[in-house]
Image 1 (cartoon, rainbow, N blue to C red):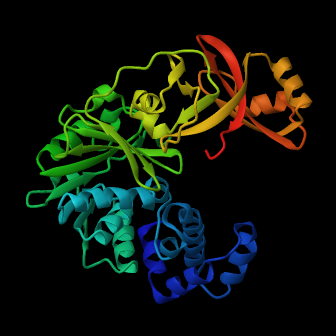
Image 2 (image 1 turned 90 degrees about the horizontal axis):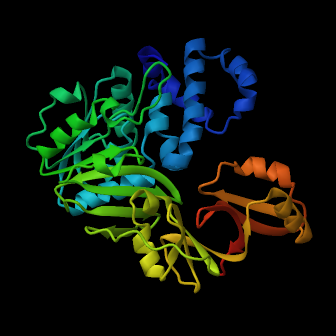
Image 3 (image 1 turned 90 degrees about the vertical axis):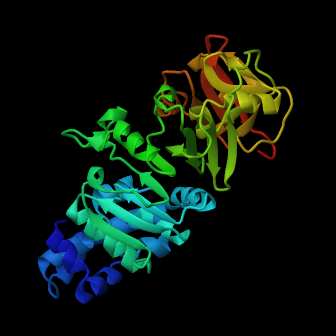
Length: 394
């Protein structure tokens, strides 16, 4: 989609065409396109069909009410922050007293929307003309144009003096393939520049990839890992809050585990009756020891982030399973056991094992009316299989 095609979508004809495609079936696209081209320009039909597909995919991130009013670019839809995460982050900033904010690398404006809805006046900046046009259209479509100013500019040249806070979301895709980059200095702009910009503001937040090494976190920053529905979505470096603090935040909730003095790694020991799988944000934040202490538990292996305990305790930071079997890794033995117990619904989890869940399912061919969970992992350094089921009430 180019700038001209997008502008056509904003006309009355384009908006009406998009509205008519809300519930269309992409599998029928050829027939739909043929029918619509009898009444509308071919370029407009193509742009509208592409936008309709993006809106349908965006429902998972933004919800139907917003997604079907918003506009997207393919890259912008993929990289935009999930609305639940953006809303949580905006709430933290509002609670700090932030009333004005410069949103640098704003993309299609998803974060700016959440910030404006939290009562914050936003300057949203991006250097791509089409992305800027989309962000501006989103502010208008959602009734937030009075709170969001969208500006086309190089973020490295924007004066952020006078704003209460800065939010930065550097692009983490690049190269010829457009794939994700895991080197913070390969972000655009580089993380080092973003940190420098953050240091000039009273408060700042930098959205980064959740796989960032802990040693790359500046000493004066607070590092937070955020999951939504059990999936780790992002990490955030906060400036102006609690230097050196580490947080794991789980959505919905939010439920937050945090510390300024992480506990030492817990001891490893034998597998007890219950196995706890910490949330991914807890693991990324290196707060498994805190969860183990809360549960009175231990690790099953010094290198594996599974906690085990002899008693069942409730925690929002891990999912509990009741373990019935602890066996050396052996596919034939597992297949025989599952056949004996008539297990046809098999959940496979792995940590510290090379075998993939789908490969295991193909080999053991589960059949029957019962369900089980198998963990492929290591226990005291040895490849092992733990068999069980979600604990009652887990």
